[in-house]
Amino acid sequence: MISVLSIFFGRIYCGFFCTWGAYQEWVGMLGGKIFKNRFDTLVPKKVDRVLSYFRYIVMLAYAFFATSFFTSKILAKLGGPNTSALVTIIFSRKVVAASVIISLCIFTILSLLVNRPYCKYFCHGSVEAGALSFAKIFKLRRNPDLCINCHKCENVCPMKVPITEMNTVYDRYCISCFQCIGYKGCPKKGALYLDMHPIKTFLKEKNKKHPKEDKINKVI
Ligand code: SF4
Ligand code: SF4
Image (cartoon, rainbow, N blue to C red; front, side, top):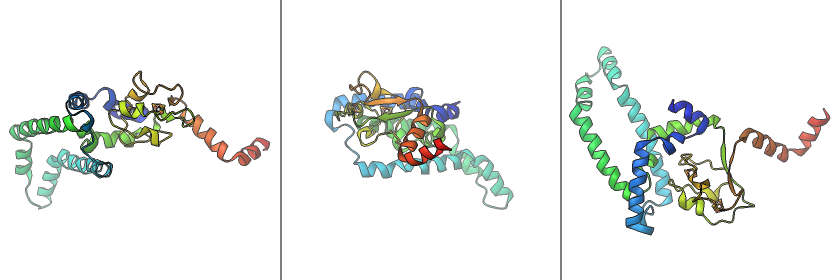
């Protein structure tokens, strides 16, 4: 279900349905009130970019642990070390419960300082959903001719996507929440909009770039 949503609507699950994401956002609102302008300025842009790659490591670790029951048995059969005891300890109720409680505490504190820290730096699901969204039926676009550079869209964006630096929002952080085009977002009509016909727009742009080819095609 989540995979199908991701293919056609991008990371819409993160923006509308993920309770963990919503929790971080609510804590973040509190953090914004407490720390005012210092909220979300903790991580410099370059560090933020590097940290975002950590999600890939988490994805590999997740895949490793998810299959560890099987791989430990295969390893043992192949004459390798018997890791099934270790796997049983890792997945024991106590270890799992302790990990959940510790993670909850850590990410609650981090969410007071940074917007959606788990989504940005740890969530392997965000990597998978991003990779799956190849057939997204809409694109979020900015019209630079109409944009007045007021940055309201960026201020309201929970993921702090640098919208004004792009004409089409292709960002690893965009969670398709549409807050930037909501009532608190862009005030200029047509400056930021959802393009519901991205293929048509793509072909139009392509024809604009190759008008001669287009004419030849028409003649033929
Ligand atoms: S760019 Fe817009 S749709 Fe994407 S996360 Fe930011 S506010 Fe939401
Ligand atoms: S809110 Fe709209 S007009 Fe303002 S910077 Fe963003 S896209 Fe441009």
